[in-house]
Length: 202
Image 1 (cartoon, rainbow, N blue to C red):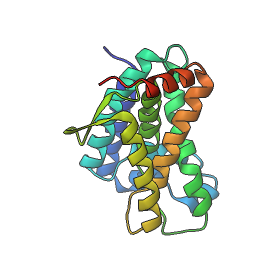
Image 2 (spheres, rainbow, N blue to C red; image 1 turned 45 degrees about the vertical axis):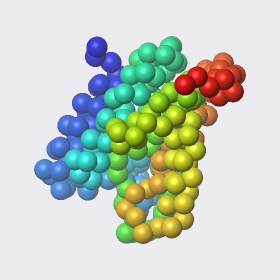
Image 3 (tube, rainbow, N blue to C red; image 1 turned 60 degrees about the vertical axis):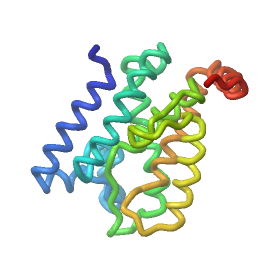
C-alpha cells in the first residue's frame, strides 16, 4: 500500500541520486553551518534528503520503510498521513540544532543524511512495542528496548571519542525528539509503554 513513508523514501532516493550526479547540487543541500548562518536555513531540512553513499542511503531507508509504515498505521490520527511527514521533517531539523550551535563558525563541518528523522521514527515505535524484536543489521535479533539503551550509550561514547564522520549526536537527539513528540501527541502511549515494559512477552 502506498503511504507517506513510501513517499518520503522515493523523494529521498531521487534527491540523493541527483546529488551524487551533481556536485553543485550536493553542496547546496548539505548541512554547512556558515551557510546556514548566512540565511540558508533550508539546509536544516535539505541535508536529510542526501546521503554519503549507497550503503548510507540503503540503511536509513530500510529502517524507515519498516518502522515508518508501522508508526503511520498505529499512531492515528496524529502520526498518520501528513502528520507523519511533519513529525519526520521536524525531527530532522531538531536533531541538527545541537550540532549547529556547536559548529556555527566551523568552516570544516559538514553533515548529511536522514538519520535524525529515522531515529525519531524508530524510537516512537519502541514506545509502542518495547519488547518487539528488532534485527540489528537485518540479522541479529534484539529486543527493541535493549537496542534503544545500547543505541544511546554508543552514540554518547562515539561522540565523545570523535574521529568519525558520523553525526552520532544527531542520532540521539532525533531519538529523543521521537520519544518526547510522541508522548505529547499521544499521552496514553506513556502508560502503555510502562505497562508493556513491566510485562515482557517473549
